[in-house]
Image 1 (cartoon, rainbow, N blue to C red):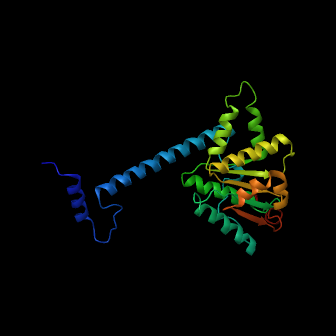
Image 2 (cartoon, helix red, strand yellow):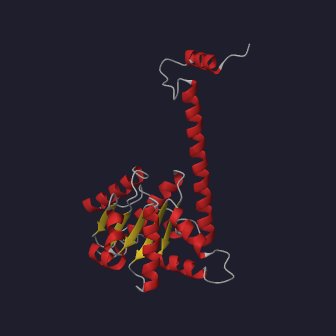
Image 3 (tube, helix red, strand yellow):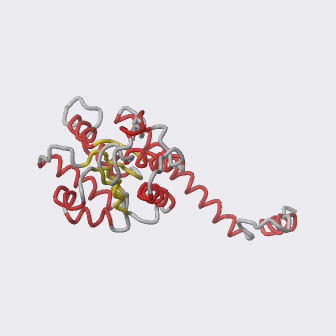
Length: 245
């Protein structure tokens, strides 16, 4: 006579070493575990496909070549403020998925904003999430390209992928010309991502008031509600160490 699932489960529990804590102890628990694992696998596959599609559209990997070696472990810490920035970046990765709040790294060139922004994206990609770091000029260039009748990528498809990717990090926010088209596109993407509970990272040399004036108080309120604002107030690290940040 064929043993029931309950009998098989009971035998497995009896064979289990005493120090091992099982993930499930009933047939119902086993079925729930299998369903959850299948859901995780499907989500990871979706994220990998989304990552590959975005990289094909942009024409490069999710991290710029000059920042592909950036990590938390090789980020240079020379003052308490830099340690605070590093801790904030690590904390963002550790709590990813628990809040839709994004991050804003604000400071002058060469202070390590790109380094930590890229390290965040790399860590999330390793964890199976989709992430992209791109300059706002890249964003505008790829968006304008969809206007061509010969473009294989349509505007709706580009915006959909940009708004569905798990983490989008926008670099050089504030260096654009500030035209109505640019501001509308930027706020549209950030707003749509926030409504879908997708966090956005921003790297900028603007202060908080300048960011509010550029993209609006509502967007900035959502961006920092549950998110983080990190000031990079120290002097450039490139000139002192030749570090590419």
